[in-house]
Amino acid sequence: MAPTQKQPLFDEMLRSARDGDGVGFDSLYRNYAGRIQAFAMARGAADPEVVTNDTMLRAFQNLNRFSGDEAAFVRWIFTIARNRLIDAHRSETRRPVLSDDDAPEQPVASAEDEALEHMSRDAVMERLSLLTVEQREVIVLRLIEDLSISDVAEIVNRPATAVKALQRRGLQALQRQILAEEVS
Image 1 (tube, rainbow, N blue to C red):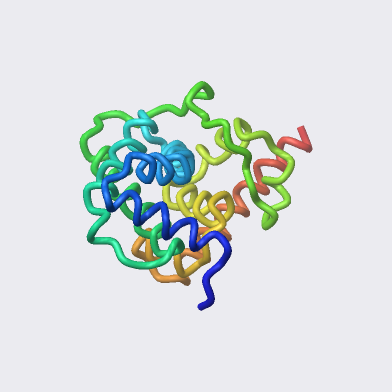
Image 2: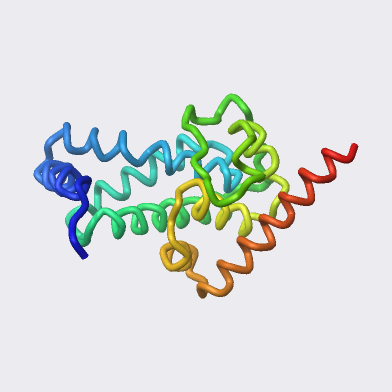
């Protein structure tokens, strides 16, 4: 696979961070923390910022163990985030409530689903909170993070067919919600 224009920049950020340069760490954090926080919010994390910081810290601590390109890094860091969320969920006694105040200021980028295109981030998060955790996780990774089926399957440790089914069921549930609101 030929490197993209972004790949040399990513390689430089990674090399800099591995060398202990604060600018490299900062660059990686700025490029990926918002995406991790949005993922944590969509998964219903009680404190998405804590999950984000834990994820980034774990990634930085293990940066020398990572090998691969930017796509592999994205899969790796989302896997770390998912594992941190699972750990946090196991330690919680109640289901967290999403707060509009915690929403990161990051636009939703989805050309795949018409229902998501016309909604604000708050409306998306509200509707996503009505899906199952598994559907919500797949929808966020596929449509908001724009990851491939195979990348999502690797992150959530499920077969690609299960990811497709979760995405289809989640989108159908969102469509039913929107149609029900239009009728009423």
